[in-house]
Amino acid sequence: YELSVRAIDGGGLSALCKVLVEVVDVNDNAPEVVVSSFSSPLPENMEPGTLVALFAVRDRDSGVNGEISCGLEDQLSFSLRPAYKNYFELVTLSTLDREETSQYLVVITVADAGSPPLTTTQTFTVDISDV
Image 1 (cartoon, rainbow, N blue to C red):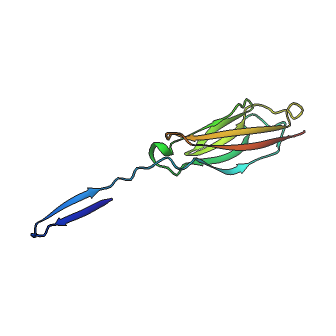
Image 2 (cartoon, one colour; image 1 turned 180 degrees about the horizontal axis):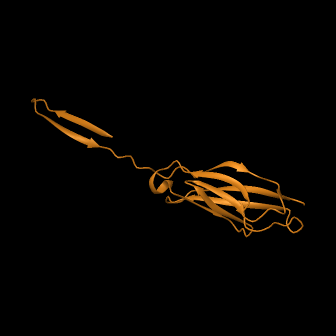
Image 3 (cartoon, rainbow, N blue to C red; image 1 turned 90 degrees about the vertical axis):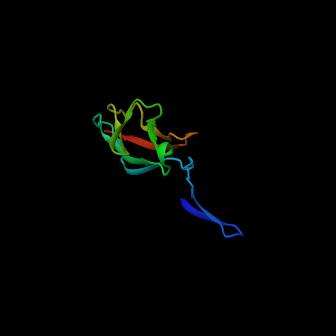
């Protein structure tokens, strides 16, 4: 913001100065996950690379506070693939076997680069159907 301030004394003298106020963003918004599509259950014979979910991540803060990273927690059967700008795809890495595992809890963690960083988690419950 730019303000002009004029001071006048009792003798008629005056001075004018300009005051600049810079508002600094604080890291007060956690990242958000917006799910566009999600498929569950998945047939156990799906090919590796099958799209499970498409989602966007965003942070309403600006600068470093709004920079986002996205990752999976402890998953060997799924992977994240950047799609377009702030969109990500959750895909299968291998063929899934229902007799071995009938349900997966896939946890995605989104963190911003603020100090301290704020995080959000999104859990996808992926059921596997028998073929």
